[in-house]
Structure formats: structure tokens, C-alpha cells
Image (cartoon, rainbow, N blue to C red; front, side):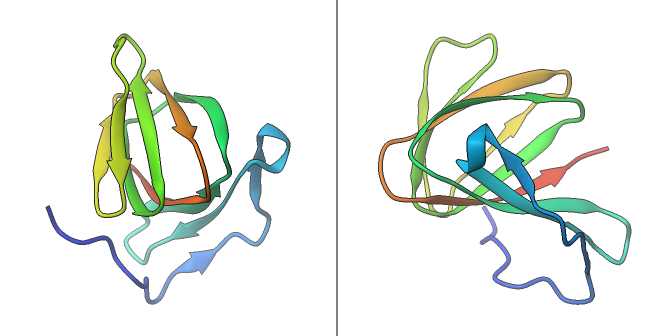
Length: 109
């Protein structure tokens, strides 16, 4: 598995943050030169459920979490350097027990 990018060059950044769950999950959207869209964010301790329209790939870049993809009953642990994919028109529950969990979310066409 390739390492998560430490930096994105030549991107456009949407300045208004995406704020969810009373500020417990916050991200910013970037648009790469090829038009691909990603979000870079943090998740504070807690359990949160997200729905997906398009397939998403989540890369954990710092911290730890447990993830349950909709339709599954088993939560899987994820730490920095790991990733998981969520199908489109689906969702996932993400739990952070302590500290911050930082991520990069890539939206797939």
C-alpha cells in the first residue's frame, strides 16, 4: 500500500470548512489539477455515521479509529498508514476513542 501524500501541490482549496457533528468532524476540500476532489480532515473522540454518494477511499494519516461499513457487523481497527474503501450509496460508522484521527478522503467517480 503506497504511503499517504504528505503534501499536495498545485491544488485549489475551498476556504469554508465542512463541519459535522457540532464541530467534532471538520474537513477542508481540495481540488487537484486533474479535477479530482479530496477532503483533509480531523475527527475528535466519539462515534459518527456518514453516508456516501460516490465510493470513497479513506486514508488514516494520524491517530486511530474503528470502522464499520454499512451492512457489516464487525468493526475494523485502522491506524496511521492504513486505508479503507466505502461503496457509493452506502455509509460507515467511525469511532475514535482518544486523541485526534486525521484523514484524507478521496472521492471516486
